[in-house]
Length: 246
Image 1: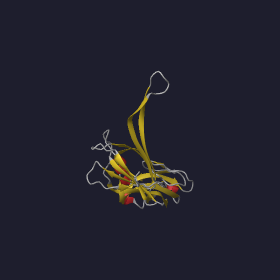
Image 2: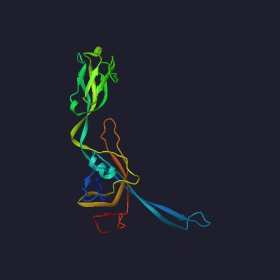
Image 3: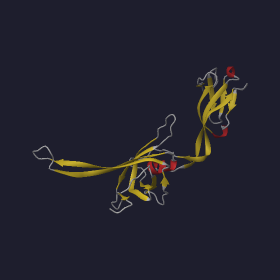
Image 4: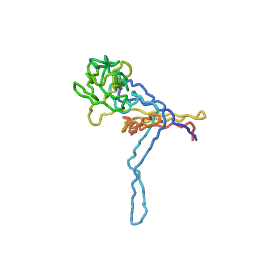
């Protein structure tokens, strides 16, 4: 007998690659595991079945984590090759429009990635991007050099420049087109303990069916992963470890 409390810890280890690194999903918030069998009833001339047999059984799970982990997401859903380097966002970088030539070189011009729009800080209205020769309420940008050009009539006005720029830190998870049926396979280990009584679940082979992330005001982002479990080459679905002998 065991009275468990709290979400426990969850580790995913890929089984479809050699020497895989076990990855803790990051401060687990919840974990649901469900065994669902398909019951078939045999009827005669009466209302109630005379026999019931269980057919196929589906094993599914759902977990929530408190951290956004690119490594965990990749291990469980994408199965891609992580790339060194990432992006950051200047949101916004404020600058007053100077006199001739009315251009602003962004702080991260050398690492410029993409324009994300400009806001007039006085009116709060967005400027319209044009290819060149901007007039009042317009701007142009060279995304190779990270230089913004404004209208002469806007000299002295504070502009909020939004853009993305490349960084050497972090990692990038590239999402590419793949063939149907291709997805990472992983072993899932769940652990919790209370009053020195450990309870463990190990599912031999799992695949993730859904990865979702929702944000809302005044709350933490808690990514959710749905998964299904199936037998490995030895026919093992998994094991459940109890702290006491019945």
